[in-house]
Length: 349
Image (cartoon, rainbow, N blue to C red; front, side, top):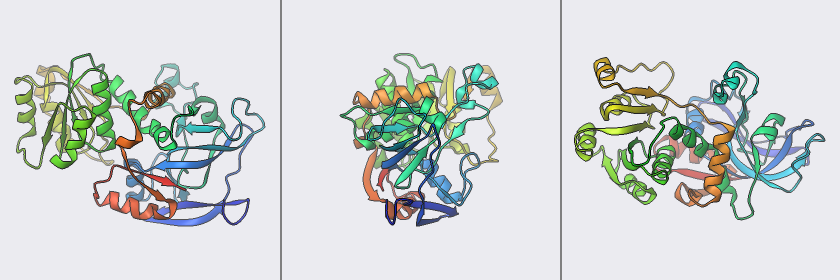
C-alpha cells in the first residue's frame, strides 16, 4: 500500500493506449472473497489487445484496472472463507463457471452462460471473488516462484486447446505462431509425445522453440511456401494436427492446406471481430478435415497446468524475459504492441 491503508497503486485503463498509474481505493472484500497482494503479474497478448483497442468486450469496460495472470500472498480473507488464511501464497484463475447453466451441465464450463471473469492484476492488491476462491484458486507449493505460478492461466488455455485436438502419441503437429501461447503449445505437444514443426516469421525467434522441443522450424521470412515446406517434412502427406496461434485469415488458410486427409486444425488464434475467412470447401469435404476452435480454459485445465509447472516441465525462465515495476507497464505494453520481440514481462507491483 502507498498513501494510506485504504488506497493502493494501480494501472488504470482509460481507452486506446491510455493507461494511467494512480492511487485508487483498496478493493473491498465480501464474506467469501480474498484480498491478495500481487507479487507478480505477467503481461500477455490479450492485455496488449486490450491496451491497443482500449477495451475488452467480455471483460473490461474502461476506466478499469486490468491484467489477469497473477500470483501473490493473501492479505485478508472474508469471514466465510475457511480453506485459506492470510499469508498463504496463492495463484488465482481469472474466471470461474456457475456450474448451473446448460453449458456447465454438459461439461462445457468454459462456455458458461454466467462465466465470472476477474481482472485487476496490474495493482498492488486484487480482490478474488468468492466463486473463484471456491472453484479456481490454489495454494502454491513452497518451491514454486510467483512468476512460475502466474503462467498457470495461459498454460491452462493451452492444456485445454491441446486436449481438444485428441492428439495421439507420435502425431505430427504444426504450430503456427511462436509467441508465448504458440511456444507453450510446442512445449506441451512435445511433452505429450508429438513430432512438432514450429512456424513463425523470424528464424531468430524460432530458435527458442528448438530448446522447447520443436523438431523442425520453418521461417516464413525465407520460406516462400510454408504449406509446401510442411508437406516436404511430412512425406507429402501433411500434418495430423495444426494449431493456428496467430489469428489471421492467411494463416487460417495455411492451416487447412497443411493437413493430411482426415487431419484436424485448431483455430486457436482469434482474428479481430468481424473478420471473414474463405476456406476451400472441396478440400474440407473430400479430405474429411475437422475444423475446431478452443476458447479459454476450465478449472480442471488450470489445475493440470499448475501441476505441470510445479513439476518443472514448464517454467517462467522459458517465457518471461524481463521484470519491471508497475510504473513501467505502459512502456512495456507499447513495446509489445509495436512488435518489440518480447515474450512476457513480469510486472512487480
